[in-house]
Every structure is written in C-alpha cells, then in structure tokens.
Image (cartoon, rainbow, N blue to C red; front, side):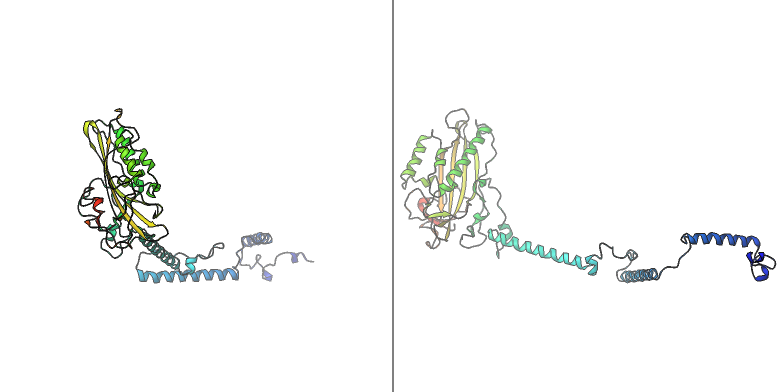
Length: 415
C-alpha cells in the first residue's frame, strides 16, 4: 500500500491543505483537534452538545403559554369593567401534585365565600329566635305592648322609699306552672336571700362599724329564716327564726311563742312569720321574689336602729292541682342594736321592737291558725273583701298605710 493512502486528501483530490486549498494549514489543524475533542466528549455522554426538546416538552410549553395568555386576557377584561389599579396577572401555575385545586377555585372562586355568608346569617337567625323564645319563657318579654324593652330590664337595688306611681305589669295573664310570674311586676325582682342587700356598716351613735356589721348579718339571717326558709313556708315551726330572737327580750319572745302555740285573732304567728299549710299547698319552683331596703339610724342612748321593709311574692299551687296563685306579703321590722360590751343584748340574736305585716291574695274567711290561706283565681270574683282597695306592689307608700291593715281584708287590685 502506498504511503499516500494514509495521509489526508490533498488539494488534488478535494481535501483541505496543500496546494490549491482555500483553508490555511493552521485552521485545518485546529479543526482536527476540535473534532477529536468533540468525539471524546460525545463518547463520554455528549455533554455540552445541545439537544432538541422532546415532543412532550414542546407540548407542555405550548400549553403553559396558552394558559398564560388566557389568564392575561381575563385580567384585562376585569380591568376594563372595574377600572385600573389591579395587580397584573400572575403566570399560571399548575395544581400542586399533593393538594390539587382548592374547593373554592373549582367553584369559580366566590362559591365558598358565599356559602360562609349564608351560614353566618342562618346562625344569627337561630340565635335570635332562640333568645326570644327563652326570654318569653322566663317572662321577660312584653310582646305587643309599648316599652317592652324597658319592662324586661332588671331593677336596680332599692336604696330608699320609691316615689311616683307603682310599677305596671308588662302583660296580663294568670300565673301558670310554667310561668308563675306572668302579669306580675315581681318577675323583674331578684330572688331569695341574695335579694336582701345590706347597707355598708358605719359607726352609728356608740355602735362601732364592726358591731353594726354583725347586727346587720343577724338581721338578714332572721329575715331569711322567717320569710324564705322552705320548711317554714310549708308549715313547719319557725325554729331557726325563734332561735334568732334575743332571749333577754323575754316578754316579746313569750308573746311570739304563745301566738304559734294557740293562735288567735289578736295574737297570730303570721304577724311575724310567713307560713302556708304544707298539706294543701306547695311552692311553685324554688324562687321567692323579693324587693326591699334596709336602713340604719341613730336611736336613744347611743344605740342604733336597723329598719327593714321588704315585699315577698310567693307562687303557690294546691297539692295535686295545676292551678297557680300568688300571695304578696310585705314585712317591716325595727331592730334595736346596743353597743358591744353593754351586756343588754345577746350576741348573734336580734331584738325586735316593731313589726308591721300586710298581705294580699289571701282568703278573708280563714280562721286564725298562724298560717296564710291564699285564694285561687277560680274561687274569687274580686281581689278580696269589703275593705279599701290597694295595690300590694305599691312600695311608694309606707308599710301599714293606705288601707293595708290585714284585719280590714281590703280588695287587692292585683297579686
């Protein structure tokens, strides 16, 4: 074989280099070196050599461009309707491979927000209807009468004798087992022992603030035991209340016990204690409505005088019967408080110097037996007997005035 055959083709056979060639020898050698290096790189994986995108990549790119253009067009239409100042459209992004499209996006963006608004409106309506029903059941609603909002507000504490006209009932109607305070101003009163509020204890005469505070606490205990104790109200003996009467006030205590043991028209235990016949009557529910006040003034010889004036309203039914009635009892007491250390009174007891009692809603023909006997709506055509007409809820008058003498058995305008 000729040596010529192993050399690159010269100009005579159309190769590069040599005579008649248009490519310089240096450039040809550089081309050969680059070709060799490119061949080595190609054999190592063709790194660095541009590759044409696959058909799938071209399809994905085209779809992304189309969706970007669609989003931009939608944004431009929105700007045209709502004006300028909105953010430019963001490039479309595919759904997350874990999350997928959000629910509100699948529903057009506003469906979820609208559903939430509808749910909130429905919840508010339910709360409103439920609140109205509950207020009506508690007797705090005055449907169909002027000033119903004010009628349902709770009353502030009574710090002095009220002035002006007596309160009006929010709506008429007879009491029932479900609504024992229907038609009564007492429905706005506080209940039980918590309704008996004590004034601040301050020195009065020779009685110190500490001694007066103890005396006020004893007075409240006596009012609770004599007017609110459930067993006493159902006819039991007022033993706790009797224990609170000062034994040093012997004449008074003797008279009280005699009135309980052998009641008479002139000495009846009901003058001091509120009791009903438990064999015939039962309280409706656990509440007794109470409204009143307590004041302190200076008495004789450095003593203090505690004065109380409270109205108690009881809802009652006959045993085995659903008919309900009410009895209103007003009690006014005066208690003497001696300075500590004088030894004229017994600590932990009360010294009663004055009692006033009046009531409405009771039968006038009942015999004196130390108890109150209410009349029921089905039994009475009016509020009482032939005596003066009075409103038992009128606390603007002094207790025991205005024809309120129980012996007169007057006509109560309401109970």
